[in-house]
Image (cartoon, rainbow, N blue to C red; front, side, top):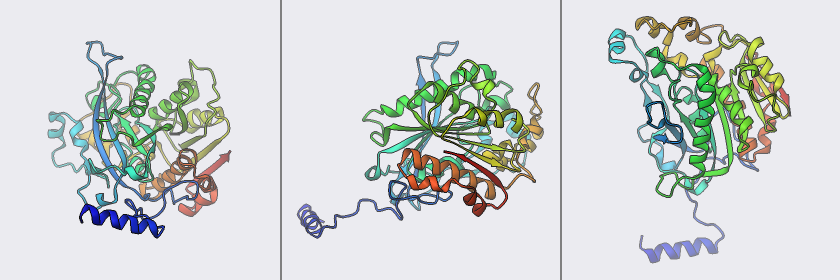
Length: 391
């Protein structure tokens, strides 16, 4: 089409009161007039980038900068659909010797719908930012069932490897002490919050993030991270901690602050790693309104991640993984077998309640608050969860 023809077409459409749609969505994204099903994929296609940031303000003992290898999922244009998608191979985290020990042991690829370097859906932005923090000894893509789905609902989701606390360090018996992580992890999240508020024009995602709308979420040690960041950084508007440790640990030096923002605690009653009565219940009690609690009645610690899909307990046997002071097999099977709910049951529940709260808080979808009910949990998975709402 010539430039003149395009101009005439535009004028004609304008005269008819019907401007040409720009990357039309299959259904409305969450907003003041829309509350899409938060348990299902949203209206956006999803792109993904892997970016390594260097925090030179926090050098390591050898003087080199602290590295944040970060996965970034974001809303992409509709023409992304049908392109090759990204999968993750967890075997890459092991040493050559460990991979040789695995022989023919089947460790499946972690498949996603995200497309590498897809075109951002700029015409529908800017989008809220959500930072995800992984658990101790885990990895930035430990919960793609959740992070990718969030991006499909209209969020830029960034998830860093917390250097010193990832699976790479765990399989080499080099995990740093949790006391170090209590200090370094929140600073990692704050670094990324600032980075995405100030993306340079040269960045492929420049202009895609709404710098005033920020949420944080995470699993286990990542739940601790989200709580501490919310306590020390007022840029955070909402948090969803999953399987959190006790407030006695993460608020030790902060007193008992009133976060003053919406909080959803997601926990599992049968969690053996961070037991309900010792960790989740005290954390819930320490929260103030507005607050919500999702209790997976038969769930365990790793019900909140994709880790169960890898059967890392069997892998740890094959590579003879031995972490001093830790029952490796006991931890890695926590929530990965009956009576814990399957991923097909648990993941839609977790997604429903987390995404609905983010939609209500960060996208102005007030109707999404009406989805945070026991009735909605029972409709998804009867008897699998107990919801407590205290708005």
